[in-house]
Amino acid sequence: MSVRVDWDRNPVSIHSEDKEELERLVEFLKTKHSVRKRSLVMEDREEGGYLFFLYQPCDPRWVLDFMNG
Image (cartoon, rainbow, N blue to C red):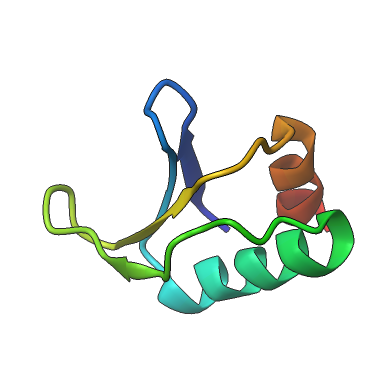
């Protein structure tokens, strides 16, 4: 799994080459941590691959849990 998070961006953006991987991450954050304020997964026109934006706080450990799980 290769997920990259841009924590310095506002809103935070989460990137991957795999759209399905991001969809699984969205579902994980939604069900396990009640993260609901986010964009749809969309094509990243600047860097290639896919991304989505988070519009509410997200603990970096939650993304690590997903990647290690």
